[in-house]
Image 1 (cartoon, one colour):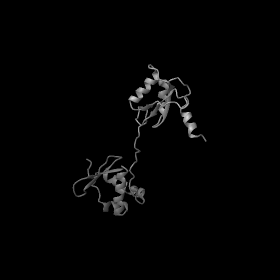
Image 2 (cartoon, helix red, strand yellow; image 1 turned 60 degrees about the vertical axis):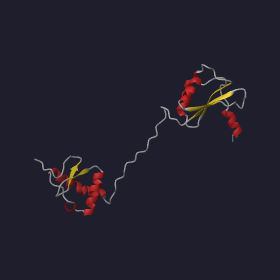
Image 3 (tube, helix red, strand yellow; image 1 turned 30 degrees about the horizontal axis):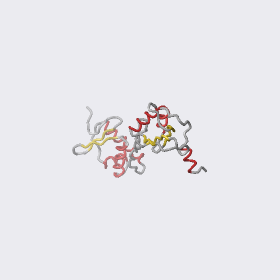
Image 4 (spheres, helix red, strand yellow; image 1 turned 120 degrees about the vertical axis):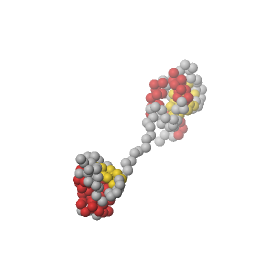
Amino acid sequence: MISMSTMQLLADHDEAPGVVASPTRIDAWMEVAKKGDVFLYATRSCLPVNSAGAKHMRALADRGLVVLTQPRSTLDPTVFNYRAHRTDEPTALTRPARPVLVAPSAKLVDDEAAIVDALLPVLERFAQHGRPCPTDKQLATKAMLTEAAVKEGLEAMVAAHLIKVLGCAAPTYRRIVIVSTGAITGLART
């Protein structure tokens, strides 16, 4: 088990004292850094004026991507540890957070597939010949179902995009479009 004082010493230890990390090394860290990560990019008494790494870090700080600090080293108090703390500001490399899409679930009824299998051929025959859409009672008789099952079956077929129900004038009050063929009830073919 490593003690906290040893962890602090390891965090303050620069593998290459006197050297400032290159922009390439800094960018490599930025690709994987998460909010709160710390990068020790130099251990020196001061940063060189023309250091490419120091300029790169200042540019990242100006964009709000990192916060720069320079505490004294605990190993050698005559030098500073130049650190960059990653903020939560997104970069071009940050993967966008997207909401998970959830498909709405259709209302399931008992024996839904059997109801659809009984209703669809009846509706296709009426649409193929352009005959008016049958009432729920007529559909129940022709498909040998209950009126409640017909209503639930029509709703399931609309949800499954097998048919579209369009409003129209009396006496039927609806037209049914068979999506796969484009045939419509109530429109006589000439």
